[in-house]
Amino acid sequence: MSRVAGMAPPVGRAEGGRLAFLALGVGYLLLITVCVWSFAASGDLSGGRNPLANLQKTLGEFASPSFLDLWFGNPRLEYRSDDGSLLRVEDRRSVEASFLAELAQASWTTVRIATLGSLLGALLGLPLALLTARNLGAPRAAAWLAKAALDAARSIHTLVFGLVLVGIVGLGPTAGILAIALHSSGTYGKLFAESIESLDMAAIDAVRGVGADPLQVFFNAVWPSVLPQFVSSHLYVWEFNIRDSTILGIVGAGGLGLLISEATALFQWGRLSTILIVVVLLVASFDALSRRIRKALL
Image (cartoon, rainbow, N blue to C red):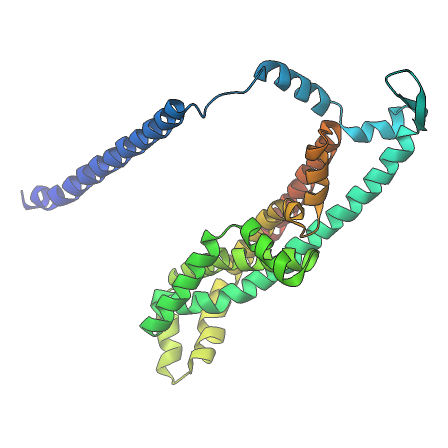
């Protein structure tokens, strides 16, 4: 009888947890309903003029990426005025070859921006993670300030950082690297702190017990245990930053974003299709590489 009575509280807690989850689900559905209703009431959910025709035209152009012109492009494409006068003759194969060379350079710039920005973000986020990890016992004021800095870094989008930094350091990849670093430092700090908080405190307490200072505690008890999680987190954020850095060129921070901006401004959907294929290949290639690295760490 006592065993049955002793099991009652866990069942009650489980029932309370289900009710709490149900309440959260109902609240989420209510939020969705309010969002849809408010947009519909203000008329902001309109699909524009002839959305189906526009979609069909866009999909048709996307289905023919511009890189195909390298082999099948018209070597003597004629441009004529309204009265039929010949304006110029263009070799589409040569033009596309020049575009692909520019695309390769922009892709390399994007990879470099993401790589250096990710490394700098990790270096910025690590000390803040050490301050915010609750089990390391940092001074409360320092922990609060560090958490506020990490929250602010995660809250501000990379593009916003990019816009501000372009005005400070000028156009080019430096602004992109710093924008990636500042935004991702918040993510790194949160992931690193969670890894540290999952540690077994026995090893940390043992090192502290022999009189080690905080730096010795970190390198002898914390670092060896969290290194695999740190590397995994770094690979995850690095992959995300490769994808994120592709749009930084829109604000003048270099990389593929400039080509994306030009293609969309000129409605060159074939070229945009080629650029997006390159973006997908970049992310997929890095994902396959990071999986191999994470597997080697296990």
